[in-house]
Length: 272
Image 1 (cartoon, rainbow, N blue to C red):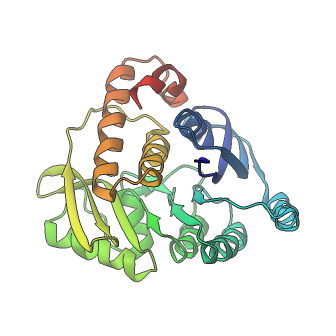
Image 2 (tube, helix red, strand yellow):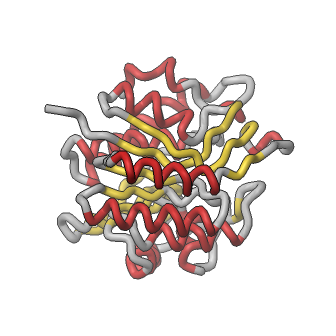
């Protein structure tokens, strides 16, 4: 059987295993023909403090026109960081058209963590991501991003189970069919919480936290999650698999000298 084709729409970072640089090796290793549409060319991870960004909005508009004329199709699309609201408008429209043809749309609304936006991010990205949520079969923001999208106050001390359900429902109200919220603290436990449209169930999956903040772990999580879902796994089981694999990868690399470079995923593909 021919493997399903995946289109990644996100930034390409020259130095750091984040974004598509972290996702493509995983998806290719797991047997999915993977293509890309860069939302920006970025010199390096923003955490280094200095960086250069090239807007690719014009390229995106021209490329989608060419692909449409050539009749290119994909079985799944996964979107990540958006440079501008204009980009998000173009990409959301494209995803909506593709969804009508049966393409699955996964949205990772990359914006921030720890209660604040990432360096280089603004409210423009928040509005852009709200636009993307409307066309998503599944979104998987972290807790900070879920709060930004829904206008919910961020609580560093954590939230209760009822608040977690309300947050999920607020994201569903924005248009997402299925929802995961990662990096939560729920009733004192580190957890991923979610809702699956397939079975109508809410769930909570707890995990042990390793106190190291690697960039790109969300991208690794996304790639493993998407591959397992496309291989027929349930949302809950696919989420657990992704969580456990990311934990192993962080544990194996926690003593790396420069964590801003991200996890060297090519060294660990056997864990998938």
